[in-house]
Length: 313
Image 1 (spheres, rainbow, N blue to C red):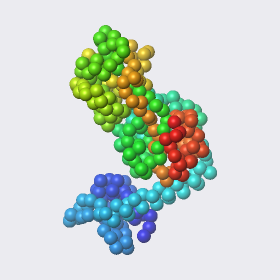
Image 2: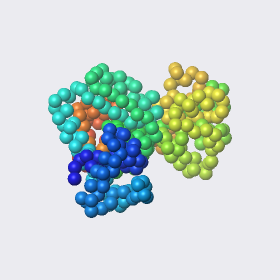
Image 3: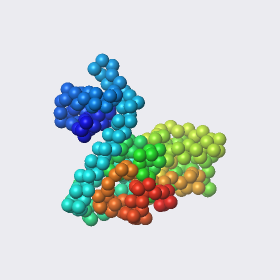
């Protein structure tokens, strides 16, 4: 048994059980990958994959356990490499962040600017997706840090670090009657066509919960994953929008009126997600502290070691 075999198994699963794609990602041949996996199965005495002819169609139950161990071992190997890099050069390297559009567009620009001033030789990459995709990127090793509102709490393999609480606002064309509602109510919102986030994004579950709690069923005419897209269609007069408050800027959004809706919905919490087995280089701690100044290195290490997390906010 060797690390190469474990990496082959992991890469095949990561590529949707497509051995050809895994071989391409590993810069090797498909027969070579298949042979190494067969050898590992023979040594372990179990089949890792369910096969239909020559095709892999699923992972067996013992295969799932092998995969979980392989993932941990490969991550530990990566951690060993990072330990060496940490002590040989603390100011160079790479940092990959997976996040949602709202965070990337409205929260992270200032943080990334300040980080790059402090660490000009760190290569920074930003990946966008829905919250579950963001978490999967970190679990697969494609990204180092996840930043999202939903989903992180659903992944036991991730350490959850609470960062910021936020709420929502309603946007509409400047003369829309909704802007005159004082106080704003869910009943008033429900009278108009509504444009808001897709179900997978930005606290949509809390929006649904609030209306359901009042026995209301708003007419959602359009959903989107992008705050800017929502604002565009609101400006066209297709409906009123419910946005994250951070996504409205009075100077940039002059063609829209806004009314705060924080009293109508539960607050949402943006969280950072890290692999529980992760070894963090010094500049990763700095990035996290720039994003959430209350998250010190000591607090992060305590959470990674299994300490409590929700008390951090």
